[in-house]
Length: 196
Image (cartoon, rainbow, N blue to C red):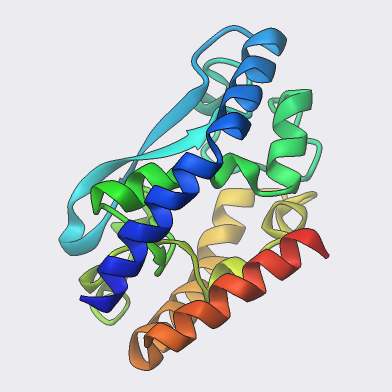
């Protein structure tokens, strides 16, 4: 109850305070490339329910059809504005809409695409028993994930074999330890790393 109340208040306040930022980012996105301001992608949420995850669009229109994973910090599909948004994690801000609607929490396992969730073991599927979040232990640990995938012959295979199992292990650790204070710690650490 405390977690949901905190999520609701924080997302409401955040969306109101960030309204000017949303407007400016929206204008910059539209000036640089055609297409919508927001990018909606289907992800798997709590109890395997599918939902639309909000992000600012950082790629050229339909560029996501080529591959589901972004490789390197200079992926040619990413726009100039998109590069800045991704660097400072500003593209994630619209997920406050998901938090407000109740499909996500501020802190929780990052929601994955169904194609990856279908590969989870029964133990790993425990991460689907709680709401996904904007940030978590794995987001902090793998904040430079794009760079880790750069140069790999098969980035998707590398992600599945090397990165995803570690992320899920960290997510299971969070489920065991979760508390309001742990959430605050993760939020502040995430903010610190963004501005570092």
